[in-house]
Length: 423
Image 1: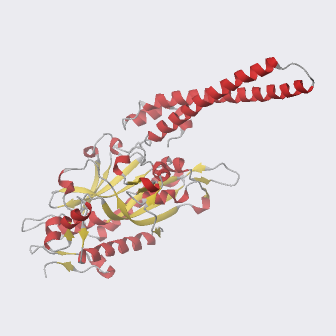
Image 2: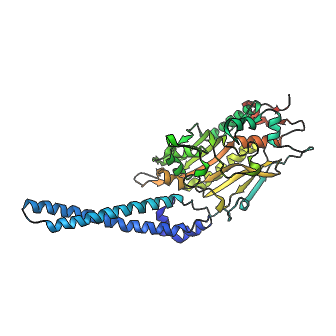
Image 3: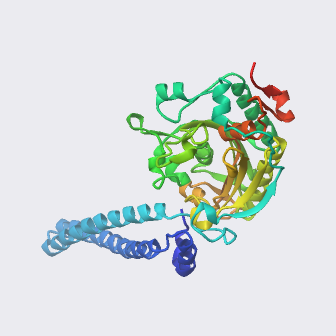
């Protein structure tokens, strides 16, 4: 949630920033609601104080046996004023909260201009693209032939875009998770297995509601939602807390299954396990002082690149355009892996600086020093390993003529085989 004081004090700067995300027109409406709220509050409070004074006078007059009819009529009128004022105030506050909750974060000045994925700026390319002396196949063809991926059985059980992952591919998944957790734990991120069913407040607090509701699985009977990323659960870990400055930064690494409806997704992305409804992920999350969030963002990106380099996956880093950012993010980097069957780079991991946007919504603050007023922390998130897509990149980039594929040395000590192929 944006700082309302900032919007009041510098509305033109806020509108200019939000215009880069196509959301500037909502600022004037929000300011209008805020002005009406600030107008109504003293009116209602003043009428309540006046009624209290008159009620006391009525009591005193009656004790003296005097007529208090005039004061009683005034109290009745004030009661109507208070009730109508409260009703309007309640509606104004509800509209204000709804509109404020729907506004996205202000984009960082370094976020590129543009509204689409194609407007992202490529920062660098790393790793050597594979060269094949045969026509490379996609991960689904290889995985199906080897009995590692069964989409048909998954569809019979749960519907389209669910899969059974089997055999050595399971061992690869577990190796990837353990490798990533070991690496990020060494970088100061405490491993966490968080809840994946959360209340609505957590999704509002992290900015995934109201905008992404059609992407989220809901369990109405229990008023719970399945998370699409453990970012939600980790961000809510310190909701409604005031942290002491010496505790910061706080860094976590959540491992969880994630669930996304992927409403509207179509085309080639729905083939295989690239864009499925259920997948596993290791997610980094940081709570930091505001002055440190820019450096922390670069730090998370460096860890992601270190993981991709260790896995020997060719990739590139892009700076995502302002208009293509998710609502909470002020700036976002994507690491995109080379996918031979598509002959292009595709998103594999990402890391976002959400500044104070989530912290304000979750009421997560820190106290800069003794006697100082609490301030909102900054929160950041970054994917260490998105398991399914990482397996796709490994299968396709390391495939061999006979349909098998090798695995990077770094994973062997974590239980992954050196090679997976035909028996």
